[in-house]
Length: 175
Picture 1 (cartoon, rainbow, N blue to C red):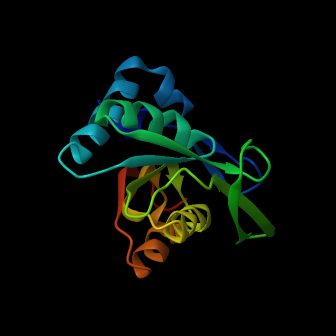
Picture 2 (picture 1 turned 120 degrees about the horizontal axis):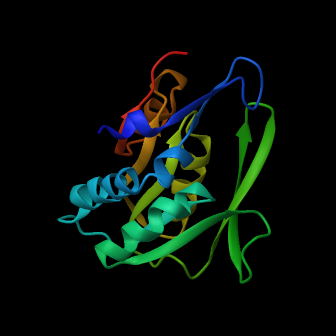
Picture 3 (picture 1 turned 135 degrees about the vertical axis):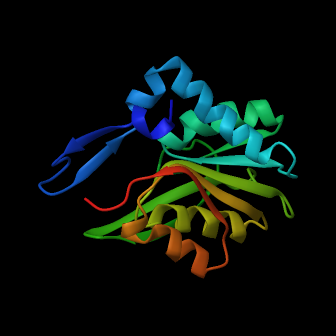
Protein backbone atom coordinates (compact mmCIF):
# COMPACT_ATOMS: atom_id res chain seq x y z
CA UNK A 1 0.00 0.00 0.00
CA UNK A 2 1.68 3.25 -1.09
CA UNK A 3 1.91 6.09 1.42
CA UNK A 4 0.45 8.51 -1.13
CA UNK A 5 -2.83 6.57 -1.26
CA UNK A 6 -3.38 7.23 2.47
CA UNK A 7 -3.14 11.03 2.17
CA UNK A 8 -6.48 12.81 1.83
CA UNK A 9 -6.95 15.75 -0.53
CA UNK A 10 -9.31 18.43 0.74
CA UNK A 11 -10.38 20.74 -2.11
CA UNK A 12 -10.60 24.50 -1.53
CA UNK A 13 -8.99 24.52 1.92
CA UNK A 14 -8.00 26.87 3.46
CA UNK A 15 -9.20 28.96 0.53
CA UNK A 16 -10.72 28.56 -2.92
CA UNK A 17 -8.42 26.86 -5.43
CA UNK A 18 -6.12 25.18 -2.87
CA UNK A 19 -5.90 21.38 -2.84
CA UNK A 20 -4.90 20.72 0.78
CA UNK A 21 -2.88 17.52 1.33
CA UNK A 22 -4.00 16.22 4.71
CA UNK A 23 -1.65 13.65 6.17
CA UNK A 24 -3.80 12.98 9.26
CA UNK A 25 -5.41 10.14 7.31
CA UNK A 26 -1.94 8.64 6.89
CA UNK A 27 -1.24 9.03 10.61
CA UNK A 28 -4.45 7.32 11.73
CA UNK A 29 -3.65 4.24 9.64
CA UNK A 30 -1.35 2.01 11.73
CA UNK A 31 0.30 0.46 8.68
CA UNK A 32 0.71 3.83 6.98
CA UNK A 33 2.20 5.44 10.07
CA UNK A 34 4.63 2.56 10.54
CA UNK A 35 5.63 2.63 6.85
CA UNK A 36 6.24 6.38 7.01
CA UNK A 37 8.54 6.21 10.02
CA UNK A 38 10.23 2.98 8.88
CA UNK A 39 11.05 4.45 5.45
CA UNK A 40 12.65 7.50 7.06
CA UNK A 41 14.59 5.38 9.55
CA UNK A 42 15.85 3.19 6.69
CA UNK A 43 17.06 6.26 4.81
CA UNK A 44 18.95 7.80 7.75
CA UNK A 45 20.04 4.81 9.87
CA UNK A 46 23.54 4.69 8.39
CA UNK A 47 24.13 8.45 8.33
CA UNK A 48 25.83 10.40 11.09
CA UNK A 49 23.05 12.49 12.62
CA UNK A 50 23.25 14.18 16.01
CA UNK A 51 19.78 15.75 16.16
CA UNK A 52 16.45 15.66 14.38
CA UNK A 53 14.83 19.10 14.23
CA UNK A 54 11.07 19.08 13.70
CA UNK A 55 9.17 22.12 12.47
CA UNK A 56 5.98 23.02 14.36
CA UNK A 57 3.74 21.25 14.59
CA UNK A 58 3.39 18.35 12.20
CA UNK A 59 7.16 17.98 11.98
CA UNK A 60 7.01 16.99 15.66
CA UNK A 61 4.74 14.05 14.83
CA UNK A 62 7.21 12.55 12.35
CA UNK A 63 10.45 13.86 13.85
CA UNK A 64 10.08 12.58 17.40
CA UNK A 65 9.68 8.85 16.63
CA UNK A 66 12.35 9.19 13.95
CA UNK A 67 14.82 10.67 16.47
CA UNK A 68 13.93 7.97 18.99
CA UNK A 69 14.54 5.14 16.52
CA UNK A 70 17.78 6.72 15.29
CA UNK A 71 18.95 7.09 18.90
CA UNK A 72 19.45 10.85 18.67
CA UNK A 73 17.93 13.93 20.28
CA UNK A 74 14.88 15.81 19.04
CA UNK A 75 14.79 19.61 18.74
CA UNK A 76 11.51 21.50 18.29
CA UNK A 77 11.44 24.55 16.04
CA UNK A 78 8.42 26.57 17.10
CA UNK A 79 6.42 29.65 16.31
CA UNK A 80 7.48 32.80 18.16
CA UNK A 81 6.71 32.88 21.87
CA UNK A 82 6.13 29.14 22.37
CA UNK A 83 9.51 28.07 23.78
CA UNK A 84 10.12 28.77 27.49
CA UNK A 85 13.89 29.37 27.66
CA UNK A 86 16.23 31.70 25.75
CA UNK A 87 15.74 31.51 21.98
CA UNK A 88 17.00 32.87 18.72
CA UNK A 89 14.45 33.78 16.08
CA UNK A 90 14.24 34.11 12.34
CA UNK A 91 11.53 36.12 10.61
CA UNK A 92 10.60 35.18 7.06
CA UNK A 93 8.17 36.29 4.38
CA UNK A 94 4.98 34.47 3.50
CA UNK A 95 2.80 34.96 0.45
CA UNK A 96 0.77 37.52 2.41
CA UNK A 97 2.77 38.88 5.34
CA UNK A 98 5.47 37.32 7.47
CA UNK A 99 6.03 34.78 10.22
CA UNK A 100 8.70 33.99 12.78
CA UNK A 101 10.11 30.75 14.17
CA UNK A 102 12.41 30.16 17.12
CA UNK A 103 14.76 27.57 18.56
CA UNK A 104 16.31 27.34 22.02
CA UNK A 105 19.83 28.77 22.08
CA UNK A 106 21.16 25.56 23.65
CA UNK A 107 19.41 23.18 21.23
CA UNK A 108 22.20 22.89 18.65
CA UNK A 109 25.92 22.73 19.37
CA UNK A 110 28.65 23.83 16.98
CA UNK A 111 29.23 20.99 14.49
CA UNK A 112 25.99 19.09 15.22
CA UNK A 113 24.72 17.24 12.16
CA UNK A 114 21.00 18.00 11.96
CA UNK A 115 18.19 16.40 9.98
CA UNK A 116 15.29 18.84 9.45
CA UNK A 117 11.84 17.20 9.27
CA UNK A 118 8.35 18.43 8.40
CA UNK A 119 5.19 16.97 6.94
CA UNK A 120 4.98 18.98 3.73
CA UNK A 121 7.19 21.05 1.44
CA UNK A 122 5.38 23.76 -0.50
CA UNK A 123 7.13 27.13 -0.98
CA UNK A 124 10.02 26.15 1.28
CA UNK A 125 9.88 29.36 3.32
CA UNK A 126 9.51 27.73 6.72
CA UNK A 127 12.12 25.06 5.98
CA UNK A 128 14.50 27.76 4.75
CA UNK A 129 13.96 29.70 7.99
CA UNK A 130 14.64 26.52 10.00
CA UNK A 131 17.93 25.74 8.23
CA UNK A 132 18.95 29.39 8.63
CA UNK A 133 18.44 29.16 12.41
CA UNK A 134 20.32 25.87 12.67
CA UNK A 135 23.19 27.19 10.53
CA UNK A 136 23.43 30.37 12.65
CA UNK A 137 23.98 28.10 15.66
CA UNK A 138 26.80 26.23 13.93
CA UNK A 139 24.79 23.17 12.97
CA UNK A 140 25.35 21.33 9.71
CA UNK A 141 22.23 20.36 7.75
CA UNK A 142 22.33 16.69 6.74
CA UNK A 143 19.11 16.90 4.73
CA UNK A 144 15.59 18.32 4.78
CA UNK A 145 13.07 15.46 4.89
CA UNK A 146 9.34 15.68 4.21
CA UNK A 147 6.48 13.24 3.97
CA UNK A 148 4.96 15.21 1.05
CA UNK A 149 6.52 17.43 -1.61
CA UNK A 150 4.47 19.73 -3.81
CA UNK A 151 7.11 20.15 -6.56
CA UNK A 152 5.10 22.59 -8.69
CA UNK A 153 5.21 25.18 -5.88
CA UNK A 154 9.01 25.35 -5.89
CA UNK A 155 10.15 24.66 -2.33
CA UNK A 156 12.51 21.84 -3.28
CA UNK A 157 14.16 23.99 -5.93
CA UNK A 158 14.45 26.88 -3.46
CA UNK A 159 16.25 24.73 -0.88
CA UNK A 160 18.43 22.91 -3.42
CA UNK A 161 19.55 26.21 -4.96
CA UNK A 162 20.97 27.07 -1.55
CA UNK A 163 22.88 23.79 -1.43
CA UNK A 164 20.56 21.76 0.81
CA UNK A 165 19.68 18.14 0.11
CA UNK A 166 15.92 17.46 0.01
CA UNK A 167 14.06 14.17 0.38
CA UNK A 168 10.32 13.42 0.31
CA UNK A 169 8.49 10.12 0.67
CA UNK A 170 5.85 11.13 -1.88
CA UNK A 171 4.81 14.05 -4.05
CA UNK A 172 1.67 15.55 -5.51
CA UNK A 173 2.12 17.37 -8.80
CA UNK A 174 -0.32 19.79 -10.39
CA UNK A 175 -3.74 20.74 -9.10
